[in-house]
Figure 1 (cartoon, rainbow over the protein chains, first blue to last red):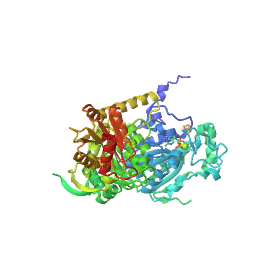
Figure 2 (figure 1 turned 60 degrees about the horizontal axis):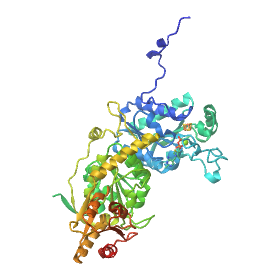
Figure 3 (figure 1 turned 90 degrees about the vertical axis):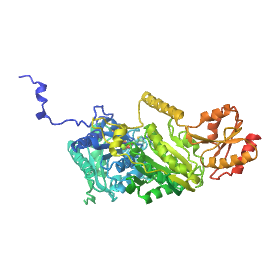
Figure 4 (figure 1 turned 45 degrees about the vertical axis):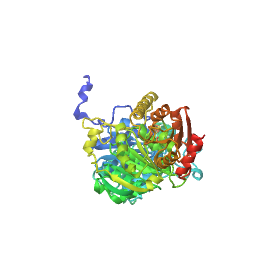
Amino acid sequence: MADINIQDIIKPENLVYKKTRLMTDKTLSYCPGCGHGTTHRLIMEVVEELGMEYETIGVAPVGCSVLAYEFMNVDMQEAAHGRAPAVATGIKRLWPDKLVFTYQGDGDLAAIGTGETIHACNRGENIVIVFINNGIYGMTGGQMAPTTLVGMKTSTTPYGRDVEMMGNPLKITELVAQLPGTYYVTRQAVHTPSAVRKAKRAIKKAFENQLNKKPGLSFVEVVSNCNSGWKMSPVDANNWMEENMFPFYNLGDIKVDGKLVTK
Amino acid sequence: MGELRLMKGNEALAEAAIRAGVDGYFGYPITPQSEVIEYLTAEKPYERTGMVVLQAESEVASINMLYGAGATGKKVMTSSSSPGISLMQEGISYIAGAEIPVVLVNVVRGGPGLGDIQPSQSDYFQTTKGGGHGDYRLIALAPSSVQEMSDFVPLAFELAFKYRNPAIIISDGAIGQMMEKVELFEQMPRLTDEEIREKYRWATNGKLKDGTRRVITSLDLDPHKLEEHNLKLQAKYREIEEKEVRYEMLQCEDAEYIIVAYGLSARISQKAIQLLREKGHKVGLLRPITIWPFPKKQIDELVKKGVKGFLSVEMSAGQMVEDVKLAVNGRVKVEHFGRLGGVIHSPEEVVAAMENKIIGG
Ligand SMILES: Cc1ncc(C[n+]2csc(CCOP(=O)(O)OP(=O)(O)O)c2C)c(N)n1
Ligand code: SF4
Ligand SMILES: [Mg+2]
């Protein structure tokens, strides 16, 4: 058998996938199997494909993705916990031709930052919000999030989330979809190749809306796993997510071109 | 001579913001400073200069809008009064840590808590000693007239950008609300986006053409690097203390006793000095214009010149008096006088305090 030389295989015509140069070479700080890294990549691929590398300003949250600015190779700001939509508002109001996005977890966006989220959406800020819903506070060690499912065990709901004591999980995405200020609201996932492709299309649409100055804010939720916080292997976490998260947080578009999607 | 107008302090400040070429104002209404945002929305500065004015949903939102906009190199400001400034403290700490040049305005009212809406000076500690978490300082300018409410706006921006540090104009309900003649300065141009990108290379307004990207953050998980950052901040603060102390001295040449007072208290103390001099007491006034950096050296020199006692006069329970004491360092007598909760002291009360606590005390 003839020897196979690897150099013969690495040729442009054989290229099936290439890391976007808008992701830095820094090793991701995320646990293996976590959805944060994939979502970062999708956003950066979209920015590159839109040719907006020099015109984009991203806002990182406080949460596991607090260091998003080390991985996303565009101008970045790191906001206080929950305040990214206000930070992004400040940027966008003064640089209306730039692409401005926030990247936020569920604790950041739907607990401490609920006010900023709702008002940025309600004002129809022409920005993109990417919202990672993993049903938990990953960064601080797996405490209950506003999105934690009923009965779900976390370090602050060790016997499972009790509705009487802690209320119901908050579907903030459905909530912001009701506001006239949102133009595009969708819920996606990144746990399988087909979900990744759909999520990328959604993120691209959101950024294109902003680029084309469509009236309102584009909001992309990504239902994601937190295998460390959920105390599962990555595979189990993805299965658990399909079985438990998706029936409550239904995937798909909620509002498109300013109109609620009727199902 | 510039245009003369009779204006409220808050309005003069708002007009000065437009004329100083400020790019954006973000704020939330609170008495006694709501005239600032009311004036700005009525004036339509977006038509006059292109300045953005936005009413935020809270002071938490306004300070974070400032963080975002300021971190792009634009000139942005907010104004509020005591409870609102308290709410902003986390954001102010982030802004100081990330070295974002912004201008804040506190038109102080009586506290603690919801307090009242009368003029007060009880936010001195909050302004000069930190306020939020971590080791940081604000450059703090204290106007004592409507004229200074106007003049200190461009000055605050100049200092903020010179040092990449938040600056605060600390006024009070009386200076904000009273009407006085003010000479307005000429309209200054706003910088263009290109000028900003050229001038402030640190700012996050889209990567530079050479591929350089900028990050604005107050985070560094490596304690040694964070210590290094803190040392850099401290060096900057020492430089500001060295170069930016501003003050006014009135009748201090022959003074045996000194009143130290800023803002409204300085106005009242001016009258008190006149009354004390009529009674034969040689009293002068030291008015800190920057309450941080504080005129420590000037106090030290006054002590060395033979001043026998200092009365710190402020509408608080005695906050600035601690800085006066630190500067005097036990060499001569230092006392505090001030009314609380928004009550304004009379010149006669100041005279009595000087006579009883310092001269006769
Ligand atoms: C004012 C403030 N309160 C609390 C914290 C602590 N804190 C850091 S991250 C976090 C929760 C983040 O959870 P989430 O937004 O869901 O992000 P994830 O880590 O799950 O991606 C909390 C409570 C903080 N940094 N600042
Ligand atoms: S703790 Fe959870 S959210 Fe954070 S990196 Fe790990 S898996 Fe991801
Ligand atoms: Mg989370």
